[in-house]
Amino acid sequence: MSASLGQFGVRGLEARRDWPPITIEEASHILRAFDEDTYDLAILQHGRRPFSATGLLALRGGRQVVLKRHDHRLRDAAALAEEHRFAAHLAKGGLPVATPLQTTNGLGVIAENNWTYEAFTPLPGLDRYGDVQSWSPFSTTADAHAAGAALARLHRASTGFDRPGRSARPLISSCRTITQPDLLAALSMWIPRQPGLTAALAQRPWQEDIARDIVPLHARLIPLLTEIVPLWGHGDWHGSNLIWDGDNPQVSGVFDFGMADRTCAAFDLAVAIERSMIAWLNPDHAAPVAYDDLTALIGGYGGVAPLRPAERALVTAFLPLVHVEFALTEVAYYAALLGDPASADVAYHTYLLGHAQWFASAQGKTLLRRLSAMLDTLCASP
Image (cartoon, rainbow, N blue to C red; front, side, top):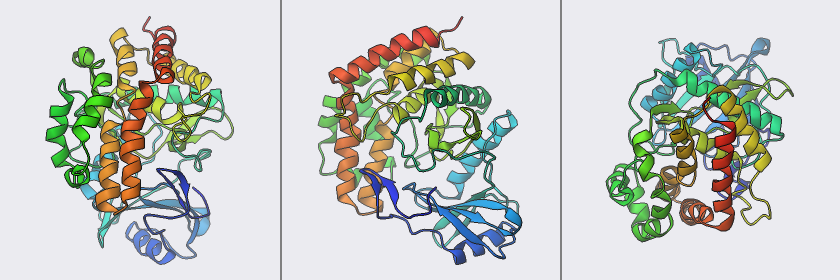
């Protein structure tokens, strides 16, 4: 979080905010419903994440609370309950995660005036990547290694959480369409179920664009579809969603399950690679891939949860595709919900299509080849 306003957007750090910051009056009103003493309440920081408003609040006696506000069209009470159930399961499995405060009525969510609110006690440790945008690398290879190991522990703890996947939720890391053999047919059925997406794509030749840029990448996944073992994943594994043990390269907590869904371990590991290892905000950089960090991340993961040969192949096959469904709902988010056609264009051309085009480039092919070798060396089952 940052004391200054602004947000991380499709073009990097932006001065504007799509959602108004949380106010003292608002926080005081909501926290009373969570049975918190709001005397001498102060806002220490505002979060820069673009899809909600977050505030770190100081209460009397040194207690702190993180308050998060969502537009109900993005996350209603049922959607937040899905995330809270998953976090509770992980906590029962011994993973240190942020779990929500409860209201006096035993609820973890407050819905009011078209907003939904959730509140958390901050996890012990340091939020060292709080001002770092996704698609940015780790500070050190030791941090990358620790993040890989922590993700493997999350996947171990996720075992046994057999709730069905989330329904038509926007802005989650889902894989409903890309895990079907006919991607275009699957998208034709999925798109109308996503709020605002049909209208957002009405003037775009999306079938032709996806057939050109994404279907060839999807063809590599098709032979592996029968090897997928469903598992709930975090969906947004990046240093900014982790709490760290001081300056030590050790993850002490995990938070923000807003993009979680029932996918599989290989998909979720591919998301982690996509989030931190490629300089998407500067893809023309001479060295856009953080290969040392990638080696460390894979090594950390494999040291805890080695993967079968088919799972290792799935990681490489998923990597060019993990963004597809999220990017499409981001097009709808900007076009339909925010009325921001310029950002919708960036989400469509630069994110959805541009990332796929990069994986078809020489640098993208090199990454996929090197990743496959790393997985076989560092992440193989004994």
